[in-house]
Amino acid sequence: MKTKLLFSVLFAIFFASNSMSAQCVRQASDFGNNTTPNYQVSGDVTVTLNTGGQTISLDTGTDFMTAAGPDVNAYLIKSNGMTNAQIAGTPLVSLENIHFGLISSNIVSPNGAKSFTVAIPSGTNIEEYDTIFFYCFQFNHFWDLGKFTPFTPANCTVLGIEDEVFEKQVTMYPNPVKDNLYVNTDFPEVINIKIYTILGEILLEEKITNTTIINTQKFKHGIYLVELTSGNKKITKQLIKN
Image 1 (cartoon, rainbow, N blue to C red):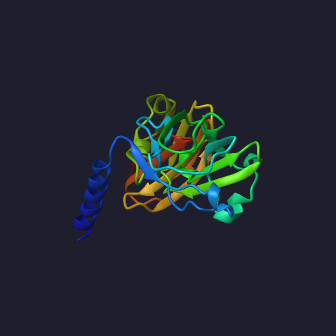
Image 2 (image 1 turned 180 degrees about the horizontal axis):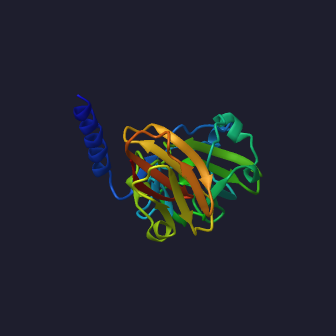
Image 3 (image 1 turned 120 degrees about the horizontal axis):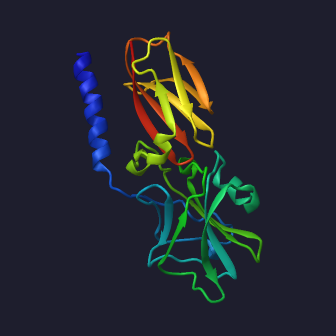
């Protein structure tokens, strides 16, 4: 019975990961958050995490509409649990954001199809971003916002692609391990490490730099998954406990 359950779980993971495309696309919704109706956004807005996980795109459809503004810009932000009303009342400088570009100006029509692609800043965890935010600088005023389902390794294979440079800078030994596991990194940024059971239960999570010693004496014999992340870089290694 346990073998059958484990096989079912692994098959589900395999099927899900092989059913997703090289690019991950999200449709934004829930616009209409400005108290001035004319400023509210309508129409198609999509966010795409591109192959490789280094760039992200914002696309508006041919049906995209909003009021003309002197300098309306589009951003990707993370809500950090705030409601739409709270986000709308927060100054742009207080919101962690990725700037896409100019949606509307005196020479740029606010309506119709537009496309922006920008590099994801180093150290940015794209999994934390979930909101498209429009803002007018000349009016110093919130324009509108919409929400989308965040990109995660569970729903986007782009985030599961191993970064070769990152992987070469992180080693762990011995494997199989009996007592102490040594994780060594030459990576210049802090790395978050998680150790999972094969069924997805998190046994350990901490931040590491340089060489870290992890005591595995309380782990049962078996196979575990070690996930190491820094910004949008991610690798997953198999660990055997003897």
